[in-house]
Length: 305
Image 1 (spheres, one colour):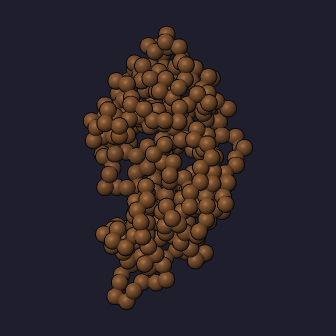
Image 2 (image 1 turned 135 degrees about the vertical axis):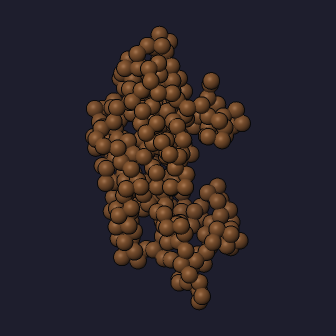
């Protein structure tokens, strides 16, 4: 079993994907991660997760950064762009290959679905078709990591003790895709480790990805960070707020205090009414000083407005 334990000075991060402007659901994650990192005098980093190039929207990264600045959320150091770090991901992949943990897979998505022994909440479980080598005439498409029969356990700051059997819930998962792009699971593990991140605060939709990342950290010799997953802001249909819902972007420029106030209230914080239209600096300062993780709800909820 793998357990997470971390008592270092906090280094937090916010890692948006530039597939569109910052909306309320993303702001919730940004505010929560910022307040928790700054509360103990820690640092807060920003990473742009633009690795999945087909989903990147031109100008979205700059717009996100401008919105963060308008909200008074100041980051430390330079912004990290995943699209510029392929050499680091390849180096990690090479290390895993040298350890005998990887194998080439020739299966298409359709074939994975057809051969899956069952389908979990994470999708079809890879049946291990190429685990012992490619069949004659098959060409390699993706690179997968061999998953042992191992229970991965960790304690989440909001959801408490969690555990997952990777072999039965996920199976051998992809680290380099058929299109040549590195998978999110590998990139985020490498980025967090090399940036010194030891506190990951993000949306609850990524809670089920955490065991894969902890497993990869153990394979690469990285110390796992502490994990805190925040409730999701839902649209009226009960789904996570996204671009397909026509989610309203958080605007740039002055007057962002109401957005920050709403985000803190969404996270269960008793921010005073009088700060709703105050300077952003005062709202942020209140959040850093008073943010109480024990008040954060563990259930997602429909966002107001």
